[in-house]
Image (cartoon, rainbow, N blue to C red; front, side, top):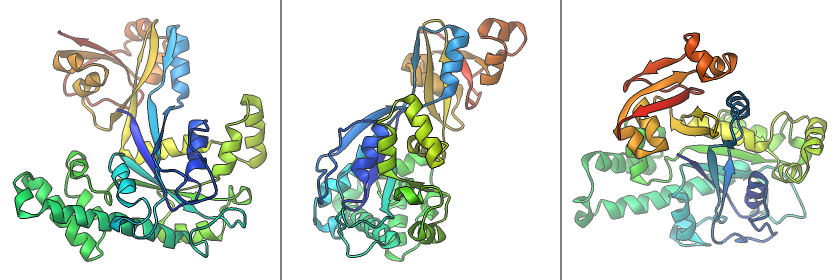
Amino acid sequence: MSLKCGIVGLPNVGKSTLFNALTNSSKAQAENFPFCTIDPNIGVVPVPDQRLENLAKVSNSKKILNTTISFVDIAGLVEGASKGEGLGNKFLSHIREVDAIIHMIRCFDSDNIQNVNPTVDPIRDLDIIETEMKLADLDSIQKRLEKNNRKNIDDDQLKILKMASDCIDNDKDLSLIKGSFDKEKLNQSGLLSIKPKIFVCNVDEQSIKDGNDYTKNFINKFSIKNTLIISADIENQINGLDHIEKKNYMEMLGLEKTGLDILIKKGYEILELETFFTSGPEETRAWTIEKNCLAPKAAGKIHSDFEKGFIRAETVSYNDFIKNSGWLDSKTNGKMRLEGKDYVVKDGDVLNFRFNT
């Protein structure tokens, strides 16, 4: 599976600049006026993972194939979007298609970059976006619960919609819903308000390391757990440099990791994703799975026939594979295990599937 993250926010908060930085491209037009982005820009980015290169060296692989993450740069939302203001419904429909939402929040002052509001207030800006998504969900729920439409809704979906409506109407915490239903059922609901969220506080260069008053106020209210402090402009500059220049510039700024690395790690955390590997002479490849994924389902990520005809999985941990220089010595030294249908794949497992066609 490929993680798909939608970058959302008010106009001119830095969404397209962040998108360009993350995808190392100029695909997203970044201009100083509202609604510059109309149709969503989509960039597919390889997920950096040093383990791939290490495995490929051991296996003497001809190719290295990363797993990927997709970033979607979605048009700026304004107050009243749920009623059609700005790009309204078009914006909201694009959010429904993503796995996680990256809320881009303006946390910098600038006379050169237009702001749709008279002041910089990240808490207010997030409230505008969240409110519009809740209103859009309410409208969707009401339509789906109309008598003529109810026959197409199963019992679990009916419960989710009713609970969501009650939470929104009475300003209750929507996380109550997440604790009552599994992820697949929640995804089927198509509700915007319950999608996993990452908050990106977009700051200027001076605030990269320690933040500023805007980020401190935001974190005091929403916690640091899913909040990242990133300068979209600096990230864009970093990605325009070669390897040595990038390293030197990041050291000068005191940055240990790029915004892409930080965002991907956080995305995997909130969506509870892990990585397993396949490695041999032809290729070393990373595959993304959900946590607690059983071996047959992991095999199905490679090909549906692997899941249907699953027999067993030859399994070596990443560390054992490296220490024992590959499959042969891992088996000889007792580090390769044969796992069956009930095996829960672990992050970093190197797998070779046996199956019947």
